[in-house]
Length: 215
Ligand SMILES: [Zn+2]
Image: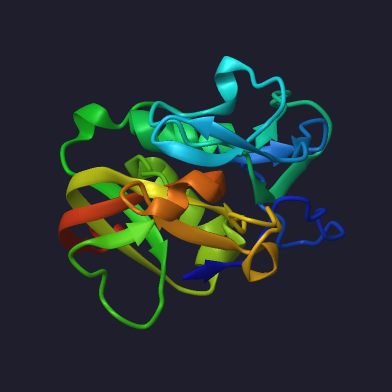
């Protein structure tokens, strides 16, 4: 699956439909995504890409290389169309509401609001969307540009980490593949050593559709 890269896209001009809530996972203009040149390294599990002079923050707990995204939340202008890589990862791993950033761990089955793709959310559905709390679900459905055109809401009994969405590099030339688009790669896939991760990917199980108006 190929996902459009939204990493460096600038915000369109102010319009009357502009959201007035800045989601926790949105980037701000003072936060910069940095992609240092990648090199071939002998790492955990074999050869793969890496940075020269890596810091402990450059890899996740499974040893996968991540883009660098500076932290300056609330500084400059909100970039509603640009997801902050580290806050998305934090929200997914710790089950934080993607809008207000508070924990939804005690809310029972986690609530997810996904873009409507014309079919029900399947068992084992993959997503890069973190969960939402109930009040923020209504806000995101109303204000998020991606969800305003159509959304589905589900309660999820089990949400597990599946892999990452990132830019896969050719093992020999180290050139980005798929035109630099984000591809979803499972942690068990050997290509995981050659991916520069930009998003954490979850797999959703025990999904029950819900109507946001009933919550
Ligand atoms: Zn919330």
